[in-house]
Length: 564
Ligand code: NAP
Image 1 (spheres, rainbow, N blue to C red):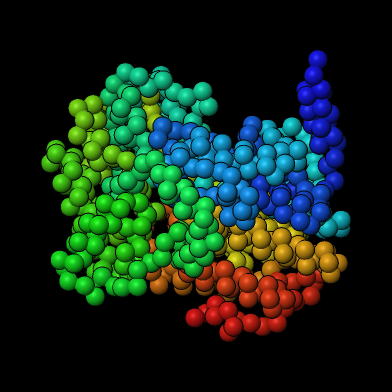
Image 2 (tube, rainbow, N blue to C red):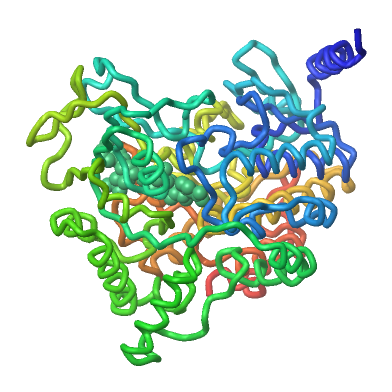
């Protein structure tokens, strides 16, 4: 018998016996893994990741729906902190598919020897701050309790599935699935009558793949959406070599850009050029494909008239592609400015509606009334289905945090502190929740940014902050109430200076979840600016934070230009 299984059992037993830690990190995606690496391997702290899934990967562990693929270009969807990882890993396509991303994160976890401190199959059910001990007590579904000075949430922004509460859902005799909880063994769609609810980024990726397999696909569309062709394809060996050789340059570009992508916003406005030139620019961007389209003019999210030109171009493309005039009309009848909801990118989405086995139901005209034993009934008719796919998104940004059962000082639950919407300082900390850090929390650029770039910045900032605390013997850090209020105002002002809040039904505002407070959650001031603000605050000695009851830092608002 080999030593392998015995050793693994011993390691697992040791892991479980050792529950008094410096830091508990919740979640083993991009952020939790990097946070573990820095706390354990740079600061020498005792840290453990608790992960609900049976493997690493975070959002990519769960989102296994047909067509799941990242919309960031693969050469930028990587850890950039490690040259060794960058040089060794090779992506196969312009946009990485879900299984490849999970393979990448396993590769990184193995390379950095992280798995021995990641406890899988462990769902956190409560995390309570014990003021007397200045420790977080973290409880899990299986009854374990961990204590730690620091609690770091790395639960992702889009992890809490939003399954709509449509009357009758439980009496449906077929099968239903949410895309974010897709069965790991896959779903046999062959020849089946499939109904898909939802046409966001997920639904738009799924439609062409489901259509190719299903007997018939009925798409139930509530809000028509823009989409830009991804123009995906295999990466050439020349490109792969170029990306490795130019990693420093790519990193510099991502850091300088508004959205953390490996391209910069063009320094021109829509009306700087003639209508003819504009059309040519949009056409070229359409051919290049992907999120780069959004960067061809700098005022698309600032000026409605400018945005209208892009919106009209994209709607005209839908009408060109979709041959059935009724479908084309429903698909191009878009009610919000371009990119005010996260712009999807696709591989054959509109083309799929030209297939004989794909039909479209416009829920604006004929809303869903109920789910029946046989399928979905709208105000017009009943659609008989074998499978319903809910591509209906997430209780974004706050949902996964609130599910952790976090209770701060004086027994105040996070759900109470955030009753009127999330309130953070920099998206990193919450007043009344000492030593808790929220990686890519609400109030930070997070989902408006290429996620690994936002994650690395947060993880590094948190690590530096903890390092400073440990060096100086600081026991507690939390933000000052006034700093939180000022930051929340700044987040709102920044969003209101753009067209983003004009998509009234967007998940950025929490509007997709019934009863959720409407607050624009991500920071819209741009990643580069945000990084500067965070660096300035750290350099000032942590202005806006309270350390061991003392106001920290020197006033630097002017230097970091928060109000400007
Ligand atoms: P989403 O953008 O929130 O879209 C949900 C869709 O479901 C919308 O079309 C929505 O309609 C519809 N819907 C929700 N509830 C409904 C109901 N009760 N009845 C009918 N329709 C309903 O969710 P998502 O597509 O999963 O995308 C969420 C985010 O995940 C994206 O914006 C993106 O940031 C991220 N994502 C990234 C990737 C990637 O990079 N590869 C891929 C997928 C997703 P309304 O618009 O009318 O609410």
